[in-house]
Image (cartoon, rainbow, N blue to C red; front, side, top):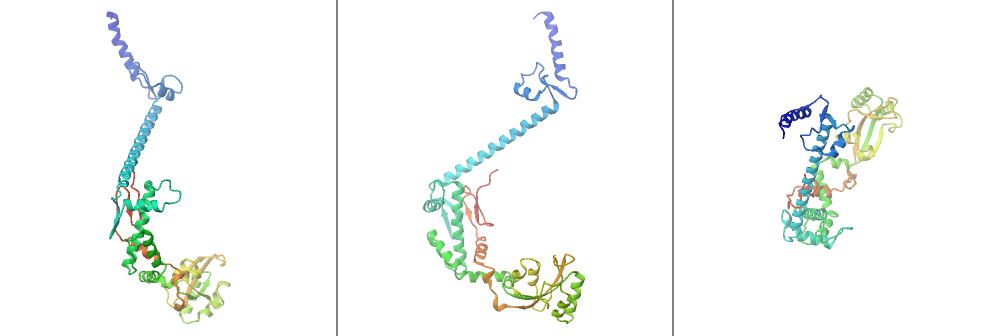
Length: 349
């Protein structure tokens, strides 16, 4: 290099560095000659006017988008790896017929038991019963656990079931109890837990005061509680067409009389002869759009109580008992959820 070239070289470098750092607050130079050659596709994408520069906002947006895409790719790779690991663990367990798929009080189910069950009675449209998918295997395991827990619950309630028998025979025993005396047992258990169930199954003979305002309802109720016959008060104040002239509505189970609303539930708190507080209902039959009702239970038809009309109870009582048992499932298959009596697949990230 000549002496003159050697002297000029630092000046050129200073000029290039100065150009590279120039910043008017809005433009960032892409290429200074000192940096590696930039990606041509990136320049074409960001440099919309072809002058070799892009706005700082565009550069920052591009960097943010690249970072977001990279994170998405990393998350997807992590999920794929987790699924692959899950499938590998599942296949390894599936190959061991003597491994325990699930255990419960007094028994266990082996991997081989589930596989044999699937082959003997495959689900319609199952592609390959010999090689069930994870979901197919867990679904059948769930059914097998449920059947055995039902047998245990029945047996402990005094209705013998041998859960050591083949599934078809266990199921036959369980169904025979559910369709037979266990329903009566379940009815009594349900009543012990919630006495209102018996009231719901009992016909109530009901009369009512039905007026347009709360003040009128209170006044009418006060007259009845003071000793005036409800029939006389109803004949004087009730809106027409809602009850008989004497205030009679009729006899029936609460939900049959009033559906599942507030009026039906209010009856459960009353003994014969008692009145409810005034209850407000929207009604097109009232000129004000408001209907204020006071109900009275005239009598209870306990001779006609019919629990079967609001049952059956066997399934509810049985599932409650089943949910109390501890079940352990092989982690590679999933985990037992006592709330819905099912095996849930392993949770992935």
